[in-house]
Structure formats: C-alpha cells, structure tokens
Length: 532
Image (tube, rainbow, N blue to C red; front, side, top):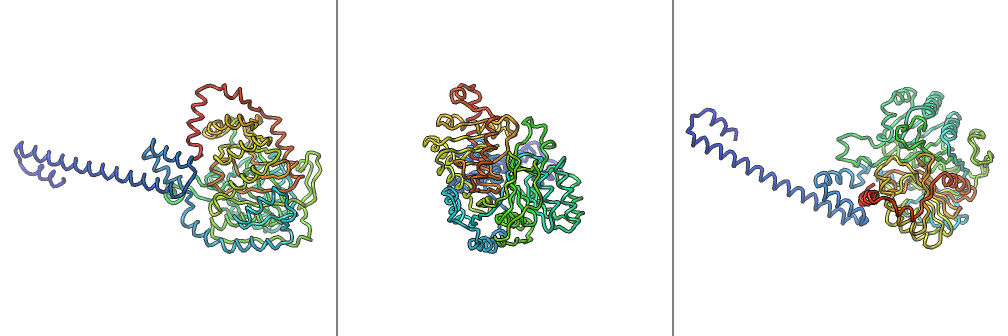
C-alpha cells in the first residue's frame, strides 16, 4: 500500500489509471478488514469455548457456571476479560510454587501436635467431634484444649487490650490485617509497636495491599520501617499483575500474636471506627475479637507464619505448644473496661477446646463451607448467625431451610444498612424463601454489624473472619475458630441477643408486599450472586 501511494504521488497517471489504483488499495483494505474480523470472531469463539470447557472441567456449582455464562453472553468482550481476571483463583506462579514447597514442613509441624497431651478428642462434644474429624482429614490440624478465651466487642476494649499486650511484649509481635487505617487508636497501636521494636522486640506486619492502601500511602510505613519493623504488602496490586494473579483475591485474616503466647482474631480490622468510612452512611462498624491464651496460640501463629512465607519467602515456624503443666498466665491484668463478662469478672480458667480453621488458596477449597454445613445440619435446637454480607451458596441455603423445617430456631442477624449495594440487593433475594420456611431474619439498626459468628444450640461457636458469601467461602484467605466451651458460648449468646434486641425482625407477609421494582432489582442481582 505504501508503494502504491509513492507511485501515485511520483508518476503522472491518467484519471482512469489513478482510479484503478485507488480501487485496488480499497480492495486490499477491505480484504484486510475481513481477515481481521474473521480472526477476531475465531479468537472470541476460541476463548468462549475454552472458558466453557474450563467451567465443565472444574465442575463448579450450576449457579456459578450459569452466572459466568450470563456475563459472557450479555457482555461478550468484557465478560471474557472479566473471567480471565476474576474467574479463576490464580495465586500467581511464584506464590503457588512456594506454597507447594511449604506443605511438607508445615504439615509435619501440625501432625506432631496429635501427640500433644492437650489434644483430647475424648473430651469433645458431639458438635466439636464432627468438626474436628473434618479438619483432621481436610487440613491435618488438631484441636487443642486448655485455652482461655476473652470475647471483646467494643473498639476501645479491643484496641486498648492489644496496646497493653504490645507494651508487655518481650520477644515477638506478629500482626496481619486486611485493613489498617490510620487515625485515632490505630495510631496508638502503631506507636506501641514502634516502642516495642526499639526495646528489641521483633515486629512483623503483613497487610493486604488493597485493603490497607490508605495506610501504605501515609507516613506510617516509613516511620515503622525506620524503627526496625518488617512490613510486607500481601498480594500487591498493579495493572501488570492482573494478568498473572486474580486481583480480587485478598488476605482477609485479622491476626495479632504476641510472644507466641497471646493471640487475637475476629472480625475487626486495625481501625478506629471514629476515623473509618464515616461518609458511607451506615453508622459505626460493630465488631468482635477473641483474645486467646493457651496451646492454640502457636497454631494461629503458624497460620500467620504461612502467610508471611508465601509473601516474602522468609520462614519463621514458631515453637509448638509447650508443657501443659505450666499454666498460661495473662501478660497483664484486664481492667473492668476490658472484661470478658458483663459482670466485670474475668474468667481465668483455661478450659476451652479450640479448632483453628484456616481457609483460602493452598487449603482444601471446600473446608470452611463444609464446616458450616456440618454445623448447620448438626443443630438440634437453635442456630444464630451474624454476618455483614449474606449471599449463601445453594447448599447453605438448603441447610438453613431444612433446619427450620426440622423445628430448629434459626436466626440470621444482618445489618440494616450495608456498604455494598450489590450485596444488599443480592441478600434480599433470599429473604422470601427463608422467611417462608420459618427462618427469623433480624436487621440490626445500630450500625454496620461486621461480626462474623455462628452459635449452634447455645453450645458450639464459630467465630472469625468468614462472611457468609462466596468470596469468603471460596476465595479469600480467612481464619475461623471453632470453640467447644459452653461458658464462651454463653458470652456469645448474650452478645448476639444484644444485637437482636437492637434489630428489626422481618415478617413474611409484610415482606411479600414490598414494591415490584424492588423484587426486580433483587432478582437481577440474584442472577449474579454466585460471583459476589
């Protein structure tokens, strides 16, 4: 084509010859366009066929497969790109190969605990035994008794307790969070770890790159590193990385471990609610954390060590639980404000049996889903669930409906206002079926209820970072504690009842009279609920 142009520009031609040359050029361009169009269609159908084949081979649930087909069908190019970026749980080649090499040493570390004196399966309740057996086969992680748990449920009590434990730290501090947001008491925590590092304590911070973006853009990382603190961004986000790893795969765990002796986990990020998402219009975030002293602490620390090694390649496998005859003592006296019980008394007996349940990439992908299903089907009298994001799988929905049909008192507590519009409408699409079956749905009015907990028969507790949605169940790095302790269960029951007392209970007849446009929106989002 360039040669034709040069020829036309440099050679005097008749009008007929010039017209013929222009027509030849147009014919060539048309042929090129046709070839490109055919190639584009071929590549599109090639990708579409490959994705369809992948969905069949993976044997995902019908809902997930159907939702992806809808996205690809209605948004052809965007849908294919979306599936490539978000349709598979790509951890990235480096992390995946690193994780594979870690299975043996970590597996041996956990396996040795089956001989520990505080691995006491004979003491387990029926609820705990089934969960423990599931975790034995799926994870190879034993449950351990002899733990002391403290359920903390106000931001000030949680953060002040963490600060006091940091101030008393002598050897090591490990902190792992999805969100660290500067401001208020969160800054006091940062100042506390700086002081700890300066007195010789080893401090490691592992923070999700997306969730803690505000923190990494603040002056705090520089100040912390100057004090000798190791900071790592988990699952870094960049335009280039999206072609090698799924970007919405996040580190959603919340962990603090001090001296391999005290651990915290639960629903709360490292934020002061007074400084966090104040413009969202959902009110203050309501969270819980469990402070734990006992033999299960090194297990939580090992989960954090796994995450640290996957991200940095540095190994620091903690010491396993020590001699059970040496009692685990509190590092500081807990004041009235930090009390574990409404009476102000602090429980000092260490008798909670705890099963540590990590989930996410590198773990059996169904493990936390199976734990939830097992718990729901075992319930005989009562189920109480608190979750900010309620988009259950078909199996979980069936388990809840079936439990209600068996006469179990099933209660679901969710926030009245939600910071996710998509989740809000998708959640509503399940209400009619649940209400009709007799499930009680309570919408909490006191802020964004962010607590993630399940209480079975007022005896067995699940508490941690897992939301009842697809992202938590099958995608993100999460952590759950299964607690076999009636005293702890009673503390959780009192807390959940407080949520119910400050909630609106939905009525089936009234719910059925909601406007038509709301039903339409709900059903539209329901189609894509398996992807949320």
